[in-house]
Image 1 (cartoon, rainbow, N blue to C red):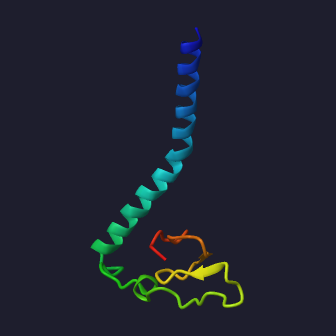
Image 2 (spheres, rainbow, N blue to C red):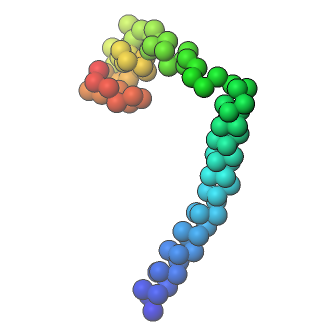
Image 3 (spheres, rainbow, N blue to C red):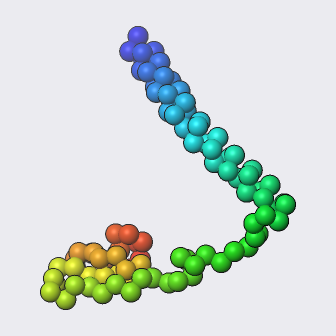
Length: 93
């Protein structure tokens, strides 16, 4: 009896999760189809440069007054001094 009740509750939760994600998935698919239509009609460029990605890491310096913090050389995020890897990008500090 308990196993059946457990399976029923898991099935209901999975259906609820699926119902909540369907609108998001639908929007993603519709946006992709719209972009493909625009590409085919040459309304937008197929290959564009990503200025944010190509700009490199932001120039953020570690706070010299706080020895417990250090800036990541890759993404510029400020981390605790005892971290071996960046909390933001997971690169070694």
